[in-house]
Image (cartoon, rainbow, N blue to C red; front, side, top):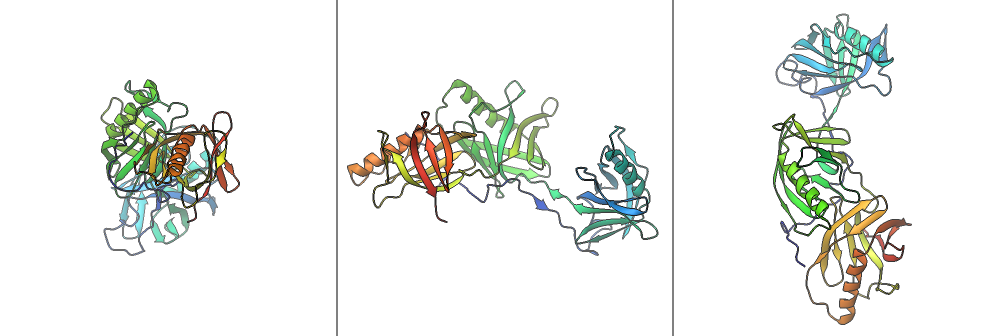
Amino acid sequence: MSLTRFAARPLRRGVLVASVAVALALPSPVGAAGDAGSEIEGLQWNLTQLLVGSELSAVPEGLTATILLEDGQATGSAGCNSFSSPYTVTQKSLSFGAVASTMMLCPDPAMATETAYLADLGLVSAYQLDRDGLQLVGADGQPLLTYEAAAVPSLEGGWIVSSYQTSGRDLASPQEGSLLTAVFAADGTLEGNSGCNHYSGTFTLDGGDISIGPIASTRMACASPELQVQETEYLAALEASNKWSQDGAELELVDADGAGKDTTVRFTAETEPTYVGSWVITGYDKGNGTIASPAEGTSLTLAFSVDGTVEGSSGCNTYSGPYTVSGRSMTIGPLASTRMACADEQLDAQEQQLLTALQVVTSWAPDGEGMVLQDSEGATQVTAAPQAQ
């Protein structure tokens, strides 16, 4: 069995496995060169304190209030409703015009916080910026509002698909037991698991715009027609995407040219599960229920990547292929292997037995610091220990 490769480069591990890749937007030092106010414009600021009565009070836990100053227009969330207001900034002076907001009613403390926040904005006459954040003050120098810089959205890292656009322009969840992923790298490359195969390509960003593709893929046959359709639709949805947004552990791709500005793919951030990483195989089923240790002088390895690919050494050759995980359920393969001749029949048998054992796995479980892979009857097929770093 042959495996179509994209390029002679190793799969990324560790570096790209991230819960969410974000960078903190650090403000420029006070007095930085540039236009008046440019040091506080273009960033989202999260409110941390506001003047309530005569005292600065912390924003109630669980509430988010923000402000973004850009092109003379301030926008944000006041804790319940969104708001907008024109603003004027010159050197360190700052003032806001009439505030417009949506009119949704919310229970306290959201409503009380919003009322105080919008009232405080009307009293602002200057700002102060330092490494701790942004402070808006009144004409008497009294602090009114304090903010910290928000995390800048970033799609870099590993993501698991929660829904994707079908050919009927509906959103569908991945089929049970299948794993759809995407790993966006800082160098503009993209790779992942499309359910049956591993894919790779490139992407470019321009603010909130994104362009993905072309995408190349391995050509393993899917186990069912339904999985084949899912794979085709997922890859098509990726390439149709032209807008992106990230909110904490959620990433959304959109086709802004489609009917209704359709969502193409939704992801959740992938945290590194315990099976991800490199393992040394300590035992494998010889095919008769007997667990054998690797032959002396050979190294059998197993490495799971967050993008849904597995690879390793079977003693004489290297192997690779897809895997899927759902809770404790796991399937591996089909596996492709290089075709170097083994030095003797014992090593050849070991290689075939290991590859067979891996491909009948249906579950995984931690075993102390190690891991055990089992078949549908609960029989151990492979045991592994963490590979020393």
